[in-house]
Image 1 (spheres, rainbow, N blue to C red):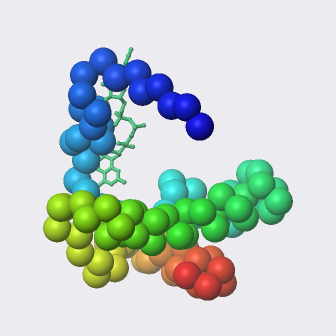
Image 2: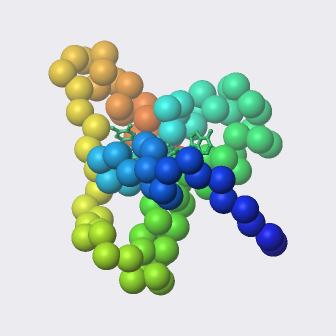
Length: 100
Ligand SMILES: Cc1cc2nc3c(=O)[nH]c(=O)nc-3n(C[C@H](O)[C@H](O)[C@H](O)COP(=O)(O)OP(=O)(O)OC[C@H]3O[C@@H](n4cnc5c(N)ncnc54)[C@H](O)[C@@H]3O)c2cc1C
């Protein structure tokens, strides 16, 4: 393909140059919510893409020898309320059901 990059400043100038560098393979919405919103046919490929997104990032870093101190040690979600804990269990169950 032929690509043209339009950039007012320098590549990575925007949010990409300011983020915390966390690789969290998730979306704002949980998998079951996405299925409810868009139907399984459209939601499942999206969920699958997201669940493999960290692999893509770390494979690109390795393949291109990108010097960015990558570490892969999982990620935490915490809650200070019982209600929040129930939500986290539901989230974990939904991802586990999809083999994540
Ligand atoms: C403080 C902060 C922390 C974050 N932490 C994380 C994190 O840890 N993990 C994570 O996954 N996400 C994080 N995010 C979100 C993530 O950084 C962004 O979602 C992502 O970088 C967006 O990428 P983008 O290429 O869409 O936009 P950007 O990286 O913002 O790129 C947009 C580009 O468009 C250019 N531009 C704008 N207007 C014009 C114009 N008129 N003509 C030409 N060029 C123009 C800008 O200069 C900019 O370079 C964070 C975001 C912020 C702000």
